[in-house]
Length: 331
Image (cartoon, rainbow, N blue to C red; front, side, top):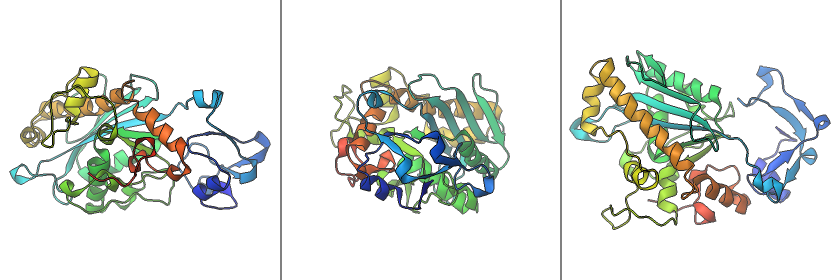
């Protein structure tokens, strides 16, 4: 906590500090906040310091080479399919599964695999299965999971335009007021506009205070990387769906389940829901692998853009384009 209180972005602009830099505070120049009722955040460590005592290191030399061991959460949700195979509606179709994988930046293997399921699910080797009888209970537990695991960076595929808005709006529909407090600041909720799924764009991504977001779908759409796939969209652009991208850059395919099978699997038994959970976990693992793909440089490009201008200070990566291009592009 900077004191006296001041907008952090204004403070950094005044001191000509760029984003994603290391900072240092001498041991005698800060006071740790010990009492929980005095803490303003869910941070593991919270302290008070005068702004003139903070030393910022420009991202040059050894300070550019060193990378923080960011905790990364990759997640994916599954919902019941609306009648006539329509998009899930946040005020009608329930969220039935949330897949999660936690990793440290630079590691190819997650240190935690966890799936939240609505109703029972058979055991999955190498993953923790948490089953719930009620959707509201599952969503509360997932919110607590995010706060407790405290990720620095949250990634996924289309999480900005789909997963996060659906979660927040669905929780609001169920009356779960506390769910929206997914960020690090206790008093700042994440918000989402009640738009139809097919009307949202990545610029509508909710902001989670203190947590960066990187949507792999956005990165692929914006990246200048040369594509080799022969699969094209209706407008002649290379396809950017998770299956096509994963095969092109990783040589891996998704665990394919046709969307019309989702409802029957959920309404079946524990083994049926296990099949759906394996599918969900695969969609959670692939973004982590893409994040570390050297050809894509997903995180590195975002960090480079954040360092290029204080304009991007403390904004989700999802709100600006790679290399500092126009942040208001819509899809």
